[in-house]
Length: 217
Image (cartoon, rainbow, N blue to C red; front, top):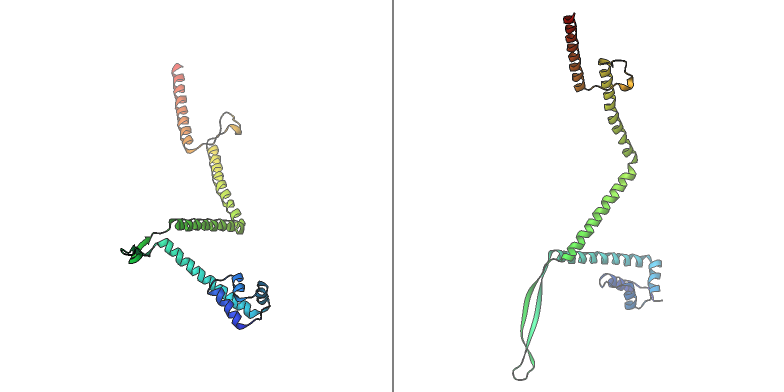
């Protein structure tokens, strides 16, 4: 087993953080085995702390680079292309440097990257809405049940008013010729007016009949 030292720890930390080396690459560059590396991680708290901090800084740097690259792809950017031009010599026939050209090339936004981000955002939003609905359904079952009770009261109250109106109509216009209660109908306001008109018409008809009988006698 290799001997542990502060210098070796600093080298391992530098390779992990600055060079983005993997554990296998670090072990190969420093001449230690993977077993030794993980043995120091489990037994030496200082080594473990230094390595974890180096890995955290490396991950933060990687994310910064990823975001910068992604921003360039979304916004578009310009790149410079340099090209050396060589021509054959008129006497020897060898290629001789003639000039250097520098061109500026425009790279437009990457539509594939934009579409990928939009799709990911839609999926994330749908997942949040679904989880929010499930949370509401699970956390407030009693509230949802209580909301049904006022609807029953709203339905019953008009029924009581209709029954009261029916009772008033039956009391004001009682059934004739001994009809049973099953044959009685509820009289609405328009039916009341028709009943009054029919009653007046019947009374007028009876008066006319009496007058005709008197004339016959």
